[in-house]
Amino acid sequence: MFNPQAIRADFPILKRKVNGQPLIYFDNAATTQKPQQVIDAQRDFYENHNANVHRAVHTLSQEATDRYENARETVARFIGAKESAEIVFVRGTTEAINLVAYGWGLPNLKSGDEVLVSLMEHHSNIVPWELIAKLTGCTVKYGKVHPDGTLDTADFVGKLTKNTKLASLSQVSNVSGIINDVKHIAKIAHEHDALMLVDGAQSVPHMPVNVTDLDADFLTFSGHKMLGPTGIGALYAKKQLLEKMAPFQGGGEMIREVTLNPQTERCGITWNDPPWKFEAGTPNICGGVILAEAAKYLQKLGMAEVFQHEKELTAYAMEQMLSCCTKLKLYGTTDVSLKCGIMPFGVEGLSSHDVALFLDNYGIMIRSGYHCAQPLHQIFKLQSSARASFYIYNTKEEVDRFVEVLKEVEQF
Ligand code: PMP
Image (cartoon, rainbow, N blue to C red):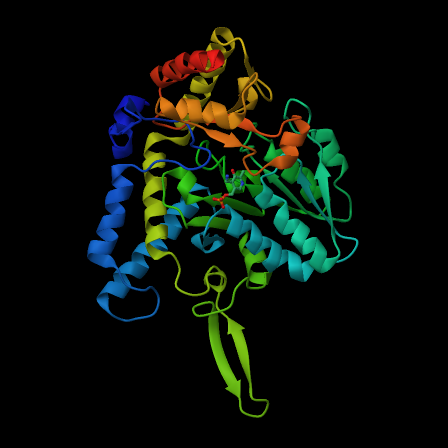
């Protein structure tokens, strides 16, 4: 049985006070807190097993390599990948999307080709494609979003043409928490011979995600948003794509051989097999190992239960906010069946930063700003928004306190 009170005991940071008040952490879409199990795993790695991977025959290197490669296997299972070779460890979602843009997009896209994204994307699923468009001459097209924040699916699907080479869409919006039916979109993209990238930064930590079921060609996510450390995340890609893709960065480990041709005085290079072909240099070894610990922690809770808990909390929070606060406005749809635990809102007469600062005085952490998604804020006709986002350790009691303080914010 899912028990947030028991879960809270695993998170040391939740015991601290901020501004003399018990910490209420509602900024989980930005990053999540870490359980003792993850903190201990990091300590154990550095205290007992630290060495570089793949490079030495000594015992510590073997132990570090085994842990790093087992972590890849755990992460692969967590998202339903067929094999661990389909998981490339990267710095996070941003690096994963850039890897696809430069490793697949740069060599394959040309003038006349199209990449289709939506207007609800995080900037990290817009900017890399605009950069690649400049380099290749391809065009980036934008699927529309309704005023309530939901995807205009008919428009998105209508923009898939014979020229579309890739559709790239977030499974969950980091601003509104709205869930996109990426399985349906992937099916239609494939009918147009386009590839499908799913930005899973806000879905993988919060709901069951199975790449095989989605039939996604690429899936990207960040460890720090799912109880793991910063500086580690993963790109899932179908093996046949990774085999054809160009390396993103050059250096040690990603090559099989670098040999000097004495005649030409140039080096000939052959690539390592995927996924190592895409992991140039010393990777974030400990980060990978701990990401797997985080995945195991979530798996033990059950992703369906995590999803259900956040949905219940969101429904409760929206209901309380709307019934108790008169100057408060929720942005985007309030239909909780279309969302997970992210709620953008505003308070009449106050900037989002004022709201966040006021709440901070009471130990409540929320986000304010445009959350790296300016086009979506343009659709909402906003400069910025306040955003509360939930995770496994948040409770109804915290929501009650949040709403109580919001009532005071309204009097400000
Ligand atoms: N996409 C989405 C939907 C996100 O929420 C985020 C993080 N806010 C990113 C991409 C970028 O993730 P990261 O900063 O971990 O690379």
